[in-house]
Each structure stands twice: as C-alpha cells, then as structure tokens.
Length: 120
Image 1 (cartoon, rainbow, N blue to C red):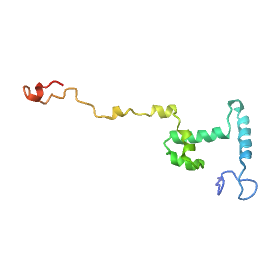
Image 2 (cartoon, rainbow, N blue to C red):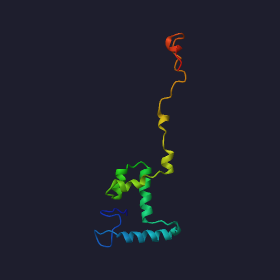
Image 3 (tube, rainbow, N blue to C red):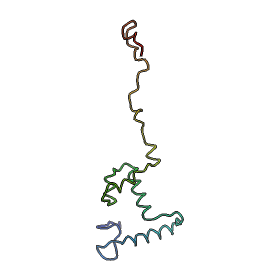
Image 4 (cartoon, one colour):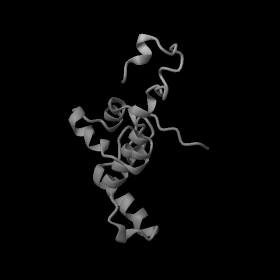
C-alpha cells in the first residue's frame, strides 16, 4: 500500500492533526542516531536547509521555494541563494556568448581603397 497524505505529510495521533514540531525533531534525531550520524550536528533545520538549497541549485525559482517553505517574506528565502560549487561550475561568461570578431576585418576590402588605407 502506498502512503498518500491527505492533509499533512506526517499525521498526528488524532485524525486531522499533525505531528508537533518537537515530535518531528525527536523522530529525526532518533533516525540520525540510528544512522550513526549523531556527531555530524544534523538537525531538522539542516534537512530543511538542504532541501531548499537543492531546489535552488536545480533551477527552482526562488518564489516557488518561498511558497514550499511557507515563508512570508522573500527576504527569508534569499538565504538559500548562497553560491554552491555546482552553481559556480554552471556559470557562463557573458563575453563567451558574444560573436567572435574577424581577425582580418579588411580581407574583403579592395587593395588601394580609402578604407584599406585607414589603420585601426
């Protein structure tokens, strides 16, 4: 059977209720300990931050990330725009997009013409 949440991803013990933030923290901390990662200083916030950063790195626009995280202000969401190696590697120098100039712009100008005598 596939889990299909109706209202909340993590439902509480009562119908229509959600897990409290503290309960989710406990569940995540227990999973971190079971995975042997307790010395890595991971938390619910780390997972949330990683989720948002991966969204941004994979091209999700910041307004969509804002909505998914439930932020009221875009300013709060802007913290996920820090520069990662993946994003740096994908940067294209705008000068590389310019048409290449002809190394010999006078090649089609008739010898002896006025334009041919002008030095650039």
